[in-house]
Length: 416
Image 1 (spheres, helix red, strand yellow):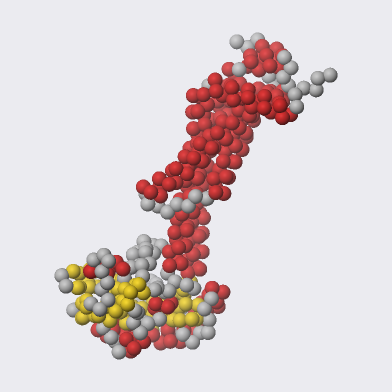
Image 2: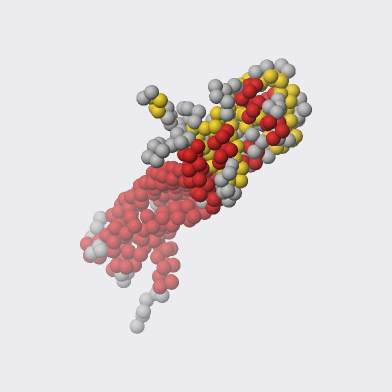
């Protein structure tokens, strides 16, 4: 008694029949796959752009410094009018000195900043001038490319020395020139250039971190920017000894500043403590939401492609009704018909998925080159989108396949 073909041979025969049927209508098959190609390519491109943006933000946050804690002047109420964050000078050098005694902190610095014109010979450049202390280099983990940073001696004597950022040095002196030892003028005050900072690049909010001039805080306060009240600062930076110390250090800073500012229990703080971990977490959450949104939009294309496969297979069942009847008449079982149409759906969707993977990779590289957006190809996203395309094809192909397998052979043979 004939037991019929083995499962492996049956699968090969079914795949061959499915491929032959698709090849007969190759233009229609190609157009049907187009939805899957666009869907898979969209998923890969969108995920790559989202991952690239997230990595870029994380790199920019890392470039800001190691284990950084920032203290910003907070909102205060005066005469019934409430100012926003940074709207009032609520921080002082005494606050920074008190913070420096916190054991979890490795270093503390503070700054004041102002946009000023800096002049050298016939060249001039408008840039951010920051008055900082000698610990700024250590806290921000900002190396000096040439020369040196100023010292405590410069700070105490209010020395007229300056350290230039790469952008300022390039625009005042030209590319490849070392300005160390030259003299520049800030508000008609001569400053000797003693160092040039290493390049930092853009910050996560698009600011050129290298477009800056550093001068001693005491010099900025007394000779350049002036101050209504001596000792007021715009921001305090602190560096925790380890990443694990960040939460403890941030809480200790808040406690010390509340004591310094004599803020009673229940009153609102007139300062804000921020860590880069907070900023990184907020950035990661925003990136995740945006990534999921982009992924959901791109996935719609996959579903549309699946519906296209279902429609084409329904048309194919109608066109091939007589062929199905003949196959059943010579011994084909319902499961054989079901398997053939499911195979056709899987071939359509997975071939479209492979083409979509290639298109998505090319699109990702083009986006990175032409639009200058950071992109990161995620192997997991590529694999998932390809497998999902196959699953979508089988899911939407099941109904036409089931309909074909349930045809009555006699009625099918009578079909014209």
